[in-house]
Amino acid sequence: MPAALTEEGAGSRALAGWAWAAVAFVFLAVGLEVVGGQYANSRVPGAAEWLVPLAWPQAARVVWWLIVASAAVAFRYAERQAGIRRHPIIIGASVIPFAVFAVGVALGAGFSTWH
Image: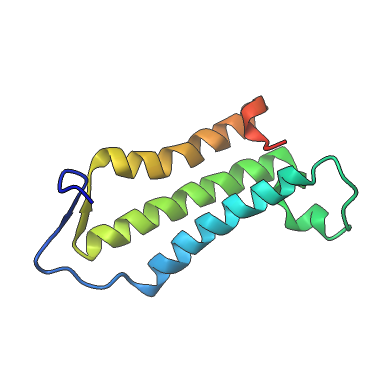
């Protein structure tokens, strides 16, 4: 990666296990949203109503995406603690979309669904 986008200090450490759990949670959340959007207009098993965030009440989805944004922040914090420095643009680009998505869900914006 170009030096302008990331800087690893000489004292870099391995990322904590919770950091990997945080980034896995972010990927899981995006995956559930995509899958939910693909089958939004189809008949689905009853379990999908509580499993897929797209079927949740609006307030629950807002909280969900704020938690996802928090997990993205936590991962970036873990990187920082491990001595991995990212450019602020990279940090913003990996966190802000989830917060914007939460606001979109709260406002009922069309971009907040994947179907």
